Image 1 (tube, one colour):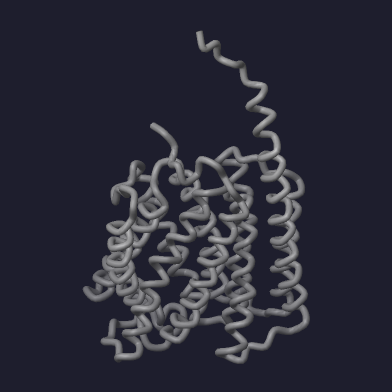
Image 2 (cartoon, rainbow, N blue to C red; image 1 turned 45 degrees about the horizontal axis):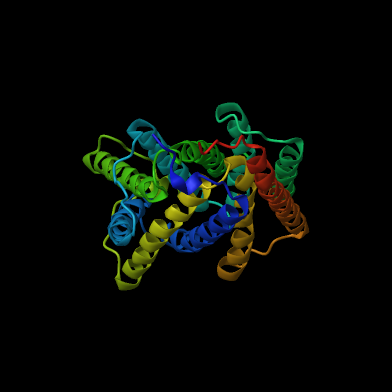
Length: 332
C-alpha cells in the first residue's frame, strides 16, 4: 500500500501556515461559543455544528478533483482519534464557560510539549535539542502568563488541562492516519464522531440516565436542556459549522503534511488571538506578565519556523547530490 501523497514530501513551512490559518478560524468560533455558553448546551452546539459541517464536507468531497473515500483504512484508530477530539473540544469549551478566554487557551496550549514527547516516544520522530528547547521555552511562556492567576484549583482549570492532553493525543493519531487516509477523510470522520457522541450524551441526559449538577458554569454548560435558537443565533451556528468543516480540514492537512513535533509549537499563536479577542469582546486587558509570556511564546514559534526552513533548504540542496550518487542502470 502506498503512502498518502499528501505527505510524500513533508513541508513544515506550508503546514505551519495552514495550521495557523485553521487556528485563526477556530479562535473566531471561540467568540461565538463563549457567547452561547450562557444560553445553550455545549452538546447542542456540537451536534448542530456537526450536522452543518458534515453537509459542507460532503459537498467539498463531491466537488474535489480526486477520489476521496469516506471510510477510513484504519477505522479503529480513526474512532479513537474522533473520541479524543470530542473530549478535547468539549472540555475546552467547558473551561471557556467559566474562565477568561486567554487563560483557558494558555493552559490548553501546553499541548505542544505533550506532542513533542509523544512524537519522539510513539512515532519515532527525531526531535533535536534545539526543537526541544524551543518548545520548553514556549511552555515557560505559558507559566509566565498564568503566574498571577489564583484559579489553579478550579474545575475549569482541570478541564483546560484535560483538553491539552486529549488534543495532543489526537494530534499524534492524526499524524499516523495521514499515512493511510486523505485529510478530508480524517476531517469528515472526526466531525461524524463528534456529532454522534454529542447526540448519544444528550439522549442520556434527556432520558435521566445521566444527571449533571448545574451550579458550576462549566457543568451548567454541559447539562443544560436544548432550546430553539433565534434567527441570529441560528446564523451563528451556521457560521461555526462552516468554521468546523474548513478548520478541521486545515488541521488535518497540516499534521498530515509535516512532522507533528515540527509544527505543534505554532499552536501557541492561538493564544495571541485569544488575548486580542478577549480584550475586544470582553474587555479582558492583559497585564505585563501576560504580554511577556505572549512574546516568549511567539519567539519560540518563530524559532521553530526558522529551524524548519533551514532543514528544508538543506534537504533540498542534498537531493541533486543524492541522485548523482545513485548507481546508473545499464540501458543494455
